[in-house]
Image (cartoon, rainbow, N blue to C red; front, top):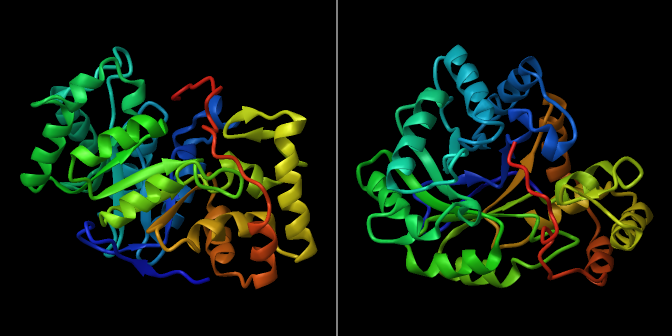
Amino acid sequence: MSLELNTAARLPFPVTNICFGTSPLGDMPDTYGYSVDAARARETISSMLSQPHSFIDTSRNYGDGRSEARIGDVIRERGGVPAGCVLATKVDRNMKTNVLDADRARRSVEESLEALAVGRLQILHLHDPEHCADLNDITRSGGALDEVFRMKEEGLVGAVGLAMGNLPMMTSILPDWDFDALISHNRFTLLNRSADRMYTDAHARGIAIFNAAPYASGILAKGSNKTQKITYQDATEAQLKPVHAIEEVCARHNVPTGVAALQFSMRDPRVTSTIVGVSKSVRVQQTLEWAQMDTPDALWAELGALPFSSDDPEAERDYKPC
């Protein structure tokens, strides 16, 4: 494997096949089980921005705005977004009312522009409609999606995507709009393939596919000896069994489990970029090294023979956005 610039028919510019996710840098202990202070976040963001053709994903509501604000602070210190960098963020609901209508979509973008210290957004995803007060506010004529695409027509946004978890709702929304990109998380990993059909359909339409959370929220990177959480939830022994099977295969081939989990996503020709959340600067370089590590064909043959789930991996999750 190697780092490269990928294209998709609907995406107006190339992006690198690794994207750095910044939700941990918003300091979200309820989700990740640890805090990230401002100094550590800034160091990590600076490391991301120092990479050639860096691709960074954030959201208006990661850490109640802290993720965007911390990225913006570093961008200001550097005198602007580096040449070749692609920055993606998301339109988010009002977290007090859960409303995401046209007015809120416009306001969310205004808040992002100010926080990130940029004049336009290269990629803007509509985020988490399944958690909003009324889906009709989003999809009706004159709703949030109409407003997002209007901002694209205005030149304020370069590409429009849809980022969410609920696959039935996502697959009902995608066909009705000319989305340039999508983000799905935890649903195409060594453990779970529930997004497989959606990826095939979206790829056929030329939509850029950004596959997020290849480590199933960390266990496939850290190892089951360090965490027993899968998709942000405490796992049972039965749920840990397939993790142990993957770890055993990787150990036989002397390949870190995190390498296999990352490259599983990167190897799929439908996936334009794999979004990897990082919470410290050393993880930026480690991700790049893992992406380029040689792996034997026999490893993939054995991993391909293991069972996987196609169920919703977050069906029982107690969702906390901050």
